[in-house]
Length: 536
Ligand SMILES: [Ca+2]
Image (cartoon, rainbow, N blue to C red):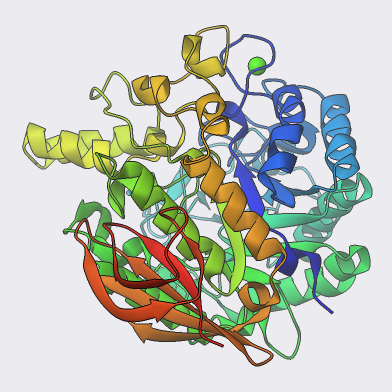
């Protein structure tokens, strides 16, 4: 039997930038509830909310100070309960973000831990200085130190992310019990599943010095047996009891080790996100990029589509630039490229994830540096780049192209004030292109990116070949070609990744094209055109 997460398209909401119901410039829970009919009409079957928990917002909510409370910026627990109820009334599942590698340093667990109050004393990873020095040579994901000294305890604590995000100590069984209570709290409220943040680095197998690498020390905590044990236990004692769905965000997992998380003898998670396609044009780290290569990008998609029977497929999220800007083209071919990428996302094998604004082809933002930037990560990198004397022009371009803020500019609802996102001053600039790229206009245009997303979602939702069919790669390069086969039927998907017309031989019986109604027989693809043809 198909599981709900195999039949549904999942839509990611970044609450701060989705819709502001009360004019304070920040999106909120009531705002999301008001827009549920829009999501229903789009055809998606589940929403995943980036964190809405109580948080000092040092890392935009990925630093949680109370797992069982709602951030007042987003509303109240009553607003959250109403959102869950109203979503379920519209047959939309609700997923929350789960951040359990670390808490905020403002969490009461951490405060009590600093004071040495039981049972919290060993909830975090504390170590006494070694001959006055830090416990090891590791460095962190945001660059720089992983150890912060606390005079009160005379000890350092470990933080793989910022110093306001201390790592939980999973060597202490009471930590896992406390986390289970949090999970049950939300599942009892009717949540249908979780997107689990950096889930494969929970358990630190040792604190020995790391080998040189990025980040240094990762071999001691990436995909360790201890992490597998924790995930199995959460699955056995919590997730399976509620039929809860889980998708894991992983850090540097290879296609060879991925099945251990989702297909092992003891299932741990239902799906994981891989990032190799996103990394395909990076040089070492994400800030340095080479020219986008369709072949390098498609190779990773093809590799993962073969490695796992069921993938979590995505092109955008709250941490990435807009796909049409870096994979396709956001100039004159924007709408064509956005539709082609939509066709790929919705015709791969696995669950498609759409990030807010992707469905209208929202683009990167031409940020003024640094005054328009809000993301702490980009601001840190900018300072670092200046220090190591990367030229001004280059470092500004780097931030403009890669900054996470590209995904966080407000949702473009209409062509009016602040794109209809808020009547107040938005916390981050609205892209000026909302005059021509916005939901209201696209809803009235049958040729729009939005209209194509709706069409493609409806096609996928009702088609077992697109949902369950086996995947096979036929060609990689300027034109990406793959097949989907199910029950004696075969579809062929052909996607032009270039701004030039491409010959494809003779293809007939076309099910759908990104270019509207087609003659029954074509021999070439227009710039950025995609088609799905029935082969048998
Ligand atoms: Ca608000």
